[in-house]
Length: 102
Image 1 (cartoon, rainbow, N blue to C red):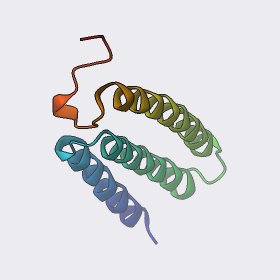
Image 2: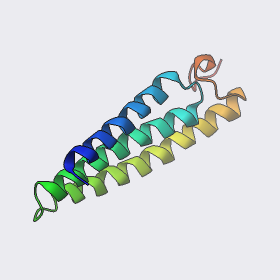
Image 3: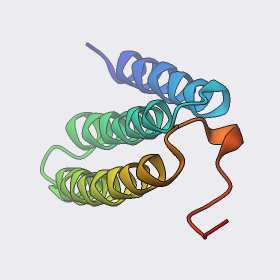
């Protein structure tokens, strides 16, 4: 496994995530696509930490920070999704206007 292979894998994951964010109409699918993009960034950090700075822990620290931010993002995102579903009884992005009363 080389650095180029890791970067190509991360690039493909990131573009799959972008495609998912742009084409999904379901809120949970959009959140999963955002998670794919964050995992692509994690692969980049770990690859550079492994191949370029073997004695540095900076890449691992960034990965831990990204994982914790992603967990918080999922918790808040799922809370918003549950609230929207309870209010509108659907999860189609194009039909949802917001959380305000109508």
